[in-house]
Each structure stands twice: as C-alpha cells, then as structure tokens.
Image (cartoon, rainbow, N blue to C red; front, side):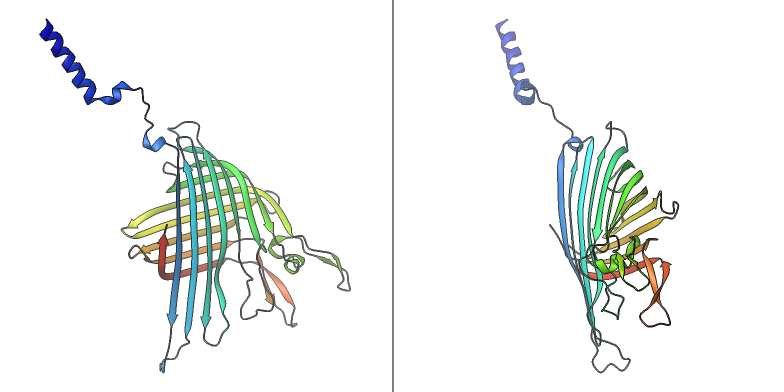
Length: 319
C-alpha cells in the first residue's frame, strides 16, 4: 500500500513539474487581439541629372531632386483601430537657361478611427480626418511674378463619419460617408479677392474701388466615397491605389470631385528603390484662366482635369 501511494505521489509530482502553468490561473489573449501600437517612418531622396559636353544632338543640362518624408502611428485591438499618417514631399528642378522650378509640393495629414461591434464582423463605424496644403508659392511658369497658390491657399480639410468595410483593412478598404464636411482655406488676400479655389471673390464698384474683401473660408457638406488597396504585385514590386470621390449637397450636387492616385514601388535593395506614380485630380472649384487680347486681363475657363505623372530613382531609409 505504501509503495502504491509512493508511486501515485511521484506521478502527480512529475505531472505538475511538467506543466507549471497549471499551478496558476492565467488568461492569454490571442496575439491578433492584443492592443498594440505600430510605428514606422520613411525618408527618401530621388535624384536625376543630365549633362552634355559637345553633344552634337543637343540638349540642356538639368538636375532634379525630390525629398520625401512619411511617418505613421497605428493602434489596433479586437474592436478598434486608429490609423494616423503624415506625408510631406518637396521637389525642385534646375535646367540650363531657366530659373529653378518646383516639381512637387505636399503636406498631408490623415487620421482614421474605426470601431466594430463584434470581433467577427468586417464592417466598422468610422471617423475620418484629412488635411492637406503646400509649403511654398506655386507659379504658372515662366511667370513667377504672380503666384497661383501659396501655403494655406489653398488648404483643404475633410471631416466626416460613415461605414468602412475591410476584411484585411490595412490592405483593402471601402468607405462610405453620407455626411462629410469640407473646408477650403484661402488665406492669401490676393487669391481670396480673386475668388480662387471656390471662395466668394471681392466686390468692387464701377471705378474699381474695393467694397468687400474676398472670403478666405468656404464650407461644404456632402458625400464621400473612398477605396484604397495595396498589394505585392511580384517580389520587390508593390502597388498602392487610392481614389476619393466627393460631391456637395448644396453646390451643384452630382458634380463629383475626383482624387485618384496609383503608385508602384520598385525595391532594388534595402536602400535603393524606384517609384512610378500617377495622380489625377478634378475639382470644380479650381478654375483655370486664359489670357485675352488685352494684356494683363484673363477670362475664366472653368475647371479642367489635373494630371501629374512621376518617375524617380533614389534612396529610401525606413526607421
């Protein structure tokens, strides 16, 4: 009997020593449900240079540089996500016989807060904030006497709420907001008086005397639909796509503002990469002007499709 009791005690002791966790009450949260912050940043420089010496086919020496900085801080748990990012770019081109010209200029902040009522759902209640402007004056080259844009002229801010779908929301997202507020800032007096970017222009009397200054702020409320998608096309080639569609309830409902970006990222190694991108915009409030037969006078030509295409090779550092 004593031998049997001794054997039982030994077996129990062996079982407990092999499974120490059984001595404690412990709750382990699955990895995908643990609250976590993810942060990353990228600094990049794209350079291009062309030089000619006694080149019989002709050509102009030129140097271009584009500096970019991107950072993001994202929070996630089993019910909430909060994605935040900041993008800034600035590019210059110097060509023989011409003054330095700007090729890119962007400062943009995005914040997206989402909540889903249960852990198996792919639908989120979402709040979104977007703000963008530029760093320096923009010109219609070669005329650099009269700027066509400045810092906070324009500046845009979107804020609204809606529903967002994404099974893997970091890679694929569809967002619909039935109410998004859009604010347009034109803080430059000359551009505001001219009614640039949709603000109310200044009022003058018949002798050209200013009666009322132009508005520097414009409010809108409308519908916003967005779709974003990113994927690895093949090894070392990534694709990012984002399209925003916005229409205002009050001012010409059904006239859609479009902002559509497609970017390809070609990774050579940890530091060298190439970028190919396309950016299309249409904003009915951004009017163009055409020269008339009278020097110094212009006629409004209405809104036109804006398109920017870029290809760059350079260095990028992730941290």
